[in-house]
Length: 329
Ligand code: NAI
Ligand code: MG
Image (cartoon, rainbow, N blue to C red):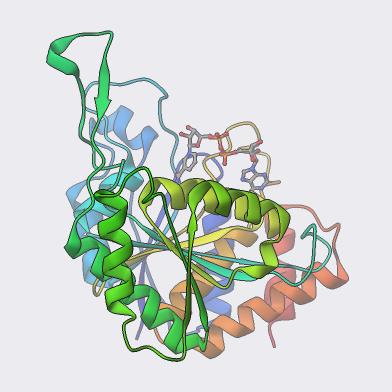
């Protein structure tokens, strides 16, 4: 029986996650839910953004659904971002972001790509310092390892094999960063060595950004390092209909946490108007990739397609979730 650790977090996370779990429970009746806490509000009360109990619960379930958390934009003593903590503590090394054209909400049809982003190192390794204590020179180190590059390559290959996808774009900047991005590129190529079903191309990240704007339908699977993937996938999310529709999956070995790409959206929190579809589609990613329930994942995606086709102007977190449940095949 699949188990899910539910972590609503802050802001609209508290609204979209219950909506998404209602859909998941309708599509997967034997799903067992366990509630857990994390985030900024939790930190303010308890001095830690992710309690040990939450990590234990996600590990025990093997799957989590995370809403969003608020983060201060300046350093706060003792505060560590909740989602970064989850990614690091659970070694969720792959960030999977599919982008699909949805009826009525996507700016253009025919887009169907998956961005596979390395989620543990690169510029987000957390190695930031002032050079020799000089407050006028700040340095961040960009770490690329063979181990992390090989495993993200393997994850991309696994996704491509399971979904019959045939074109891989390796996005890097090896012309300027030959040691780090050269290593990343070579490792991914090594993983795909002899994989005759897959065509591999390389794009420099700046060219990839241009193509993401100009011809997004050309992409199938993109594999890239942490920062590049972060930026490219938000740009790509535009084509899927924006933040309200963008799902993601942080995926390690035997453990995964799905989350909508959006944040806690404090500007609309508490009003019941947040779009729950990003969270609902994140749940579908758990079904497909983690629980091996491809049929349930497809049922949820079909229901979302039906709702967007027939009621494109439907508003309200609960109303949208209820409509999706009704539209389940
Ligand atoms: P945001 O994603 O929360 O919101 C950006 C804009 O999109 C806002 O105008 C918001 O109203 C709108 N929006 C987002 N999701 C929506 C939805 N489901 N339905 C309708 N409209 C939606 O990003 P923002 O405003 O930069 O950050 C707010 C807080 O969230 C910050 O504290 C930030 O640190 C945090 N954040 C957390 C993330 C996470 O938990 N993974 C990711 C991004 C931001
Ligand atoms: Mg998020």
